[in-house]
Length: 217
Length: 196
Image 1 (cartoon, rainbow over the protein chains, first blue to last red):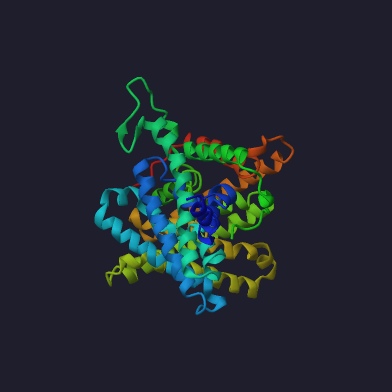
Image 2: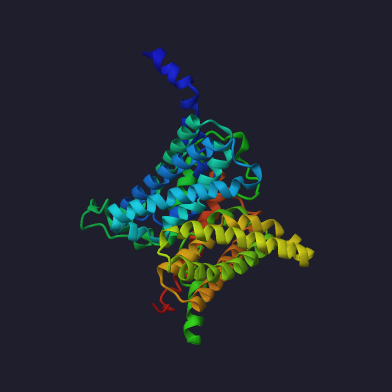
């Protein structure tokens, strides 16, 4: 059994997975792609639906970009990647409209904004465009999960302290006076800042920690 | 009518700031808010592109997509319009004003992936605005975004001498400042009510 574990731990897929979830976690390491998602982190239901949509788009677009990587002229690859991503986002939007109309309405424009989420473009450009489909799929799912973990970590204190509920279930009793500020925009900034602070204090400092100040992509 | 446009414009700047209340355009906000000079350049470029693309996308949506029942294609259509417009502006500026090109040029490609641009177009559709109204909404959102990033750059320039806890350096402290700015802008809520 330990041999088996060792084998898994050494395999390339596992390395790619681990890198995506933790070592290169898009939010902590790179502070990317929080734009369009921070807004919906005030309710667990919204966050979970959004995360599922994001993982789906990230995985599918990574595989598609990877399959087409030898046929895409380099000069137009960015626009090709954007169109691939947009197509999958439309799929998500239609599915949400059909099966979860309430959540879809609550998320509003933010579902469409998955297209401009820097993480998806970043993975397509940085990983999928130079790797075969299978590692690209693993990378997409891993980055998506790493991303979702952070979103959920931000959402739990926001919904719990802001409304005393989680998934709309009342958890805190009458004695709890809701902190309205947590469900409003400033709460999201403070919660994310604290999460980044905690993560950076406990993580070993990677070599490339210094921000270059360059453009995000 | 004029009063309504002004209300749309100013509420997009203050009470419904695209960055501090809607979280759009955060990536470039965090990455390019180190110096006032670059912040002004990027802010101007974003304002210009926002004002133009919101009107362009209004026409694309209401005159092209709705008549053919193709509303679900709006994500792709908007992205193409934005990318094409930015490319076009880049070529025009390069041809006619090299000075402006060197000032704004490096920021233009960044703008295509700025979520604020696509976000404004999508909000404009959801809120069912008219063409003129969406122009004022786009321009106001751009000014609001520029205001936020320039203020942040000013604070960060001053902050270089401050001693910040280790883990908070960089993005952490920037987010906290953004939170405090959002609090300040929240104080203006209710001062202006945009017409529905």
